[in-house]
Length: 139
Ligand code: ADP
Ligand code: MG
Image (tube, rainbow, N blue to C red; front, side, top):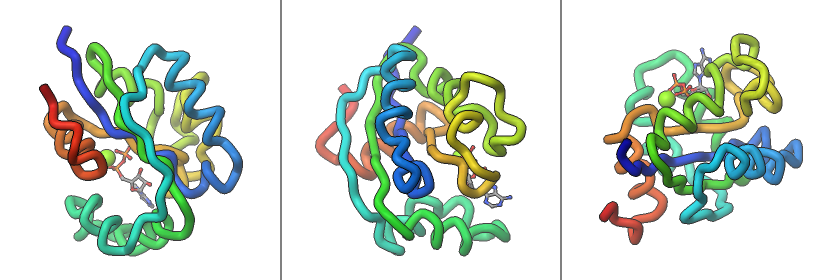
C-alpha cells in the first residue's frame, strides 16, 4: 500500500463546539500521522478557491459563508492509504447517514455543518495539502 497525504479541515462548527481536540484524538487514534497543522480563518477567496469544483452547486454560497464564519484547523495527514482511511474515519457527508464511530456521526450537525473535510482522491490529497502547505512537496 502506498504512503499518501490527505488534507483534513476541522470546520468552524467543530471549532465553535470545542471539538478540535476530540477530532485530532480520533485522527491519531486511527494511526494517521499529522505532518502539518495550522489554525486560520479562511478568507472568502480561499474558501471559494478551495471549493471551486462546487461553484455551480446550489449550496455553494451557504458553504462559503459557513467555512468563513470562524476559524478552522487545517492538517496534512500522512499514512498508508491515508485518503480512503480518513474518508472512512469521517463518515458520510450527511451526519444522519454516518456510521457509529465516525467523526461526523459524533460531531456533525447536518449535511452542511458536518465537522470536517477530507480529500476525496489521492490526486486531490496532493493538491489540497499543497493549497495550505505549499512547502510540503510530496517526495
Ligand atoms: P464531502 O465533504 O463528504 O466530500 P462534498 O464534497 O459533496 O462532500 O461537499 C462538500 C461540502 O459541502 C460538504 O462537506 C458539506 O459541508 C457541504 N454540502 C454538501 N452537500 C450539501 C447540501 N446538500 N447542503 C448544504 N451543504 C452541503
Ligand atoms: Mg468533497
